[in-house]
Image 1 (tube, rainbow, N blue to C red):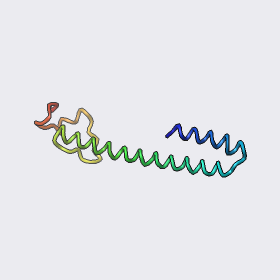
Image 2 (cartoon, rainbow, N blue to C red):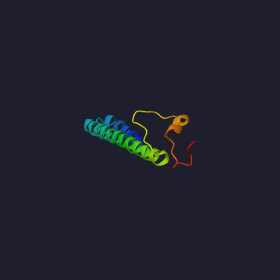
Image 3 (cartoon, rainbow, N blue to C red):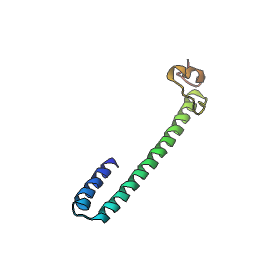
Image 4 (tube, rainbow, N blue to C red):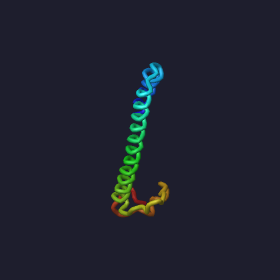
Length: 89
């Protein structure tokens, strides 16, 4: 999507300002705004899915869920260990 923005900027320069066509500038700017909003929604969705997968893996490996908002550094994961994990200390 980042490359699309570069091509659209090129379109604004070449067709919009180069030929003094204000409609091309407006349509292209709105298209760029739409692409940016879509990119933002994809990033938010990616973070939601990543968090869900992360929590699922923690439960599968250690048998306990890490409370939301709690950062569990690797050296502190022993408190979440269980007999089900081959990595338990």
